[in-house]
Length: 128
Image (tube, rainbow, N blue to C red; front, side):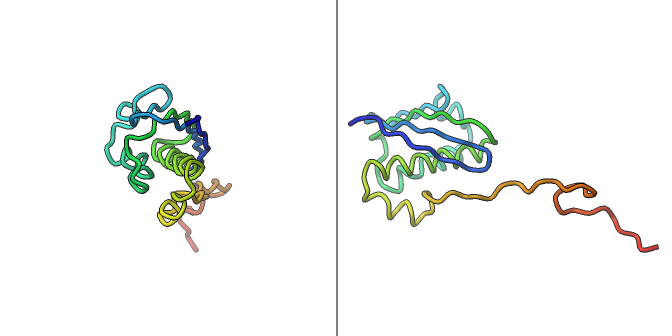
């Protein structure tokens, strides 16, 4: 099997995933998964596409990710893994699509407007 690559995005994060046949090793920016994402719920979020298609410990991953925070990065990696699995086998498409892993979540932070302390919050109004 050759190397399959895919890209995933979420908020300000961009993840590039390289999928190869192996024993389930995940390297993110040169670190192990448990070292890069110490929280177990974030680790589960990253590996969830493999559990969905029952392909755990079959493929090795090499991931380059930058931008955003750890949650945005984890969801960008999840999307990239899902896209790579669909490139590998078209039968994986329907279970991943039903969990919305192939859909780009376009929600981003709204910009701050002038005359306001945040995007929509206003200062206290006094009529008199």
